[in-house]
Image 1: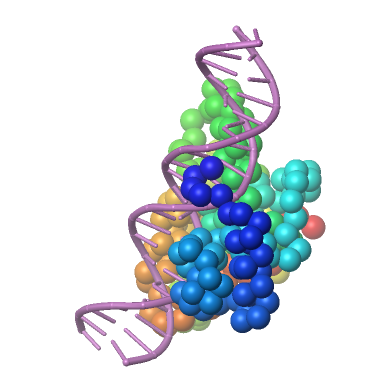
Image 2: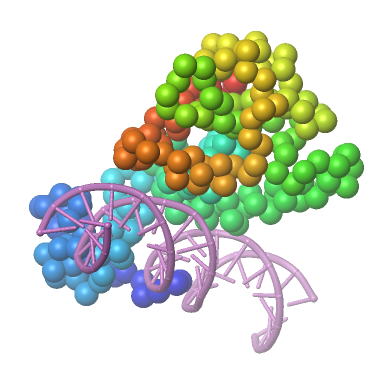
Length: 219
DNA sequence: AAAGTCGTCAACCGCCGTGGA
DNA sequence: TTCCACGGCGGTTGACGACTT
């Protein structure tokens, strides 16, 4: 393991302390619990192992499917992915991805890249929904992320896009104007560009909008 | 049976954003 | 405005068990 394993006695002390004082105040917890561990270790041990309702064991097929879909939408934001998987932690999801899925998907991508036409590395596979940043007309909040589908040439499939008016996408806005840079970069710039000082709420706001869109897509 | 290799996953590390002083 | 403490997160590490040679 990557550190000193927790003993049953330490787990007991941590659990007892959190039952008494509640979650949070991690900086005080080692002292309160009488543990010779740093605040981060205590928090991690609780969140990844001791918290009630944590699901252990193999991932089910539905969970794996969901992880793949969510990762496509969110990238390596493991805590956000895990938030949609009841009982699973970000660490679990991350480990599962690194051990199982990244290799599997890389192998698939290698196979695709040798058998299909040229496509930019960040471009989606055909009919794979991706996020584009759309400036809604009359909106003062700046570009918002929306799901969009692509055809096999790496171009937007307008048919699907325009049929998806229920997502709130402005059909008069041509999707090819949208930004197709790598997702992580767009997220970073999106947050950097925020000037309302409420980035956390805003992040969840658009996460939810993406999932609302995704539901429409998968229905 | 022994040695070497690989896969898994708990734990740690370092960075970032936030809020309060 | 700056500094600092804290919470939170993703990336990485490394021990250990399983598997292969």
